[in-house]
Length: 81
Image (cartoon, rainbow, N blue to C red; front, side, top):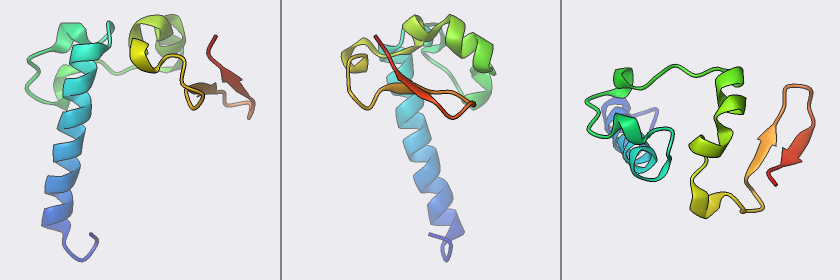
C-alpha cells in the first residue's frame, strides 16, 4: 500500500465509511449522526466521554464478546460486565 498511496487512501476511506455507517446504525451514541457527510460531523471524544457513555457507545450484539475489553492507560485491562 505504501507503493500506491492513492489506492491506500481510497481503501482507507472505504473502510472508515463502513465503520462510521455501522456505528450510526447500531450504536445508540452515534445514531444521531446517521446521514453524516464526513468524519467532521462526528464529535471529538475523550476518555471521560467514552467512560461516561460506554453503555450507549458499545454495539449491543458485541457487548459480551470476550475481545471486548477496556484498556486503561495504567496498563491494566478490564472486561465489560
